[in-house]
Image (cartoon, rainbow, N blue to C red; front, side, top):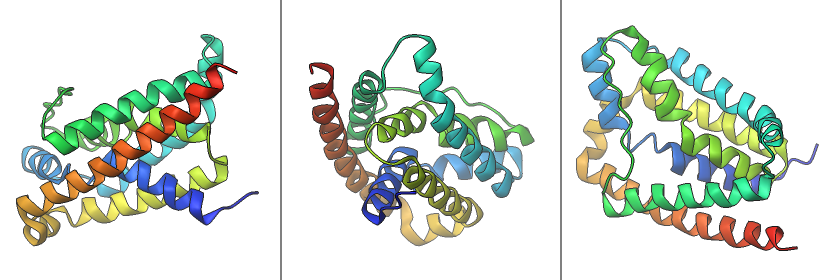
Length: 194
């Protein structure tokens, strides 16, 4: 076991920025209005389960199709780069169709793909190329706990922060994510040419 506080904090921040649960509060509130109720515990646990399973099996799945982790990390860096651009510039490059009005909103589109979506799953494998797996698991668990708190208190948070506060938080995390994507790209692109 190689627990490293710096790795845990970095992995937590990267996942937190990619999942962007604060920025998704308006979507969560809209889903709550449409479905009447969102099961915060269930959504958090399902999202956490998907992320941890992918963390362990994702590499094997890549191996089956002949892709190494460094190549996947470079691809992940591009995805993080575009997510960061969306957050900073306030544009939508990728729109997920999620028109669910039943209780299934808890699982789809909330747990998957809003929380445990392409961005966060790609990020997990990108992080795995750089950090010890136990540190990433701790970061996922911390994010799931934070997700649960945000889902439970989403209406209060929206009233407290306000739309402009949410936008400021999105932009700050967008810049952090942009810097992380550049670092991830430069570290892994070198490995492909060795």
